[in-house]
Image (cartoon, rainbow over all chains, first blue to last red; front, side, top):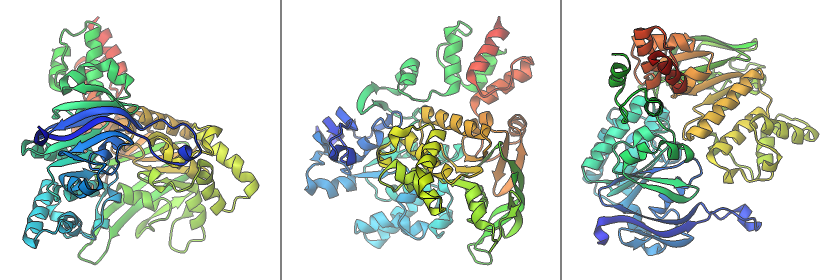
Amino acid sequence: MPSHTVCELRDVSFTYPGAAAERGTKVRPALSGITLSIKDGEWVALLGSNGSGKSTLAKHMNALLVPTQGDCIVYGMSTSDADHVPAIRNAVAMVFQNPENQIVGTTVEEDTAFGPENQGLPPGDIARRVNDALAATGLREKRQSPVYTLSGGEKQRLAVAGALALDSSCLVLDEPTAMLDPQGRAQLLAVLAELHRGGKTLVSITHRLEEIIHCDRAIVLVRGTVAWEGAVPELFQSTEALREWGIFIPPLAALWKDLHARGITPLPSVPSLPEMVQALCP
Amino acid sequence: MSIVVDRLSHTYHPNTPLETRALRDITFELQRGAWMSVVGHTGSGKSTLVQHLNGLLIPQSGSVVVDGMEVREKSPHLRAVRRKVGLVFQYPEQQLFAESVLEEVAFAPRNWGVPEAEIPGLVQSSLALVGLDGQYLERSPFHLSGGEKRKVAIASVLASAPEYLVLDEPTAGLDSFSRKELVDLLTALKEKGYGILLVTHDLDIALQASDAILILNRGEQVVRDTPRRVIEHLRGDHIPGLSLPDIVTLSAELHDRTGTVPVTWDWRVLAQAIGEMKR
């Protein structure tokens, strides 16, 4: 049923064109033989070390990149067909890693309105979208502020607000928390959880395992291929594999697994911090 | 030899409706061969502070003195200060522009007027400092991995032969492996005598690698002390946007209860101590 699938990749490979290729040097493809699908309303985490192909894959989801081989189908439309690209970009919004590269307006409000203005919406609808997006990202008080007065973390939230204002049914976020402090990170994750409850399809790219607990599913990329796919709690059990894939294991979890392996604690699953203190030092 | 910051304050857009106080009365000294980390919530003034250290911003009140040279408007020393204090900005790989790593790293020393004959050697030694060998020289900086791009960006700052390295969130977006590599690299540079000032959200890195930590909150200096004392401070006093890594909190709780478990940020050390306690 095409309407239930947001994005489907069929045996997708992608190689970046560039100097090395021109000189005839053999270049490793950024993606090779990727097959996966993302269902409507799902929240999927895309994990992998630097250079594993996460960002390249994300850019396929709104036709910024098209497969060198294979097919990428978004809401039933092939990204390789140029006629479909505008519709695909309306359906899938993207938040990139570095907010500096995606801010275009002079004030917070103008920047957020840029997307819906381009969609040609009536002013009333634009205002409503901007209001909602700024409220969701905690930027309402800053709406009149010039963008250059924002801190790094505020700029990152502004980038998310800009994508929210597009009101697309799917949002792809490439490391949206990289520049946020722990509190800002928690706030943004709460915003995403809320969007997820509202039925939006979310794909988040991250290095941080502790950020994916609310996701329905995780996909692990290793050197451009899908190394693992499944439910999040199962991923947390695969400590050895995670280390091999270059994915950070929260230290508390690593400690607990180690204590369990040495028979110091009988509990296999990682408890909360207060429970841990209680268990170790009653 | 050191960077001395004394009662530094800065307000953006003074006397306008946009007036924002970014820094107030910041005071510290960074010696060569030492590592200080600056941590604080987003908007706490970290980046504003960094821009004062090599004269991108001139103190409105208070002072910044680098190896005896004061940073002020029209100072004849400004050029020398900019060379002594190398700044690595957020997402430094966005500033890469050259066709090859060689050209990239050679750009700054050429601008400083270093004789062409010395350039290749300088580029090689700067790359060696960040752990990249000669095979990178002809590669395009754009086709390197995230971690390698950061290293090239740092090498191109090192090629100006600075005495201090100031880095604004250099670990953002790096995976745990590249992050550890970067921390090891900065530790090695510190041991070679560079003064390191690291701006970060990552309290974990600040605690394990720095000699001193300065915490900013809304532009004010909350505490400046050794990692151990900063842990004590943070346990007693909550600062917005900052929380101790779980492993530190756990070890501190167990330390209070047992007296034998050490306060640590290393889960392996903690696992060892718990094992001994239980035996």
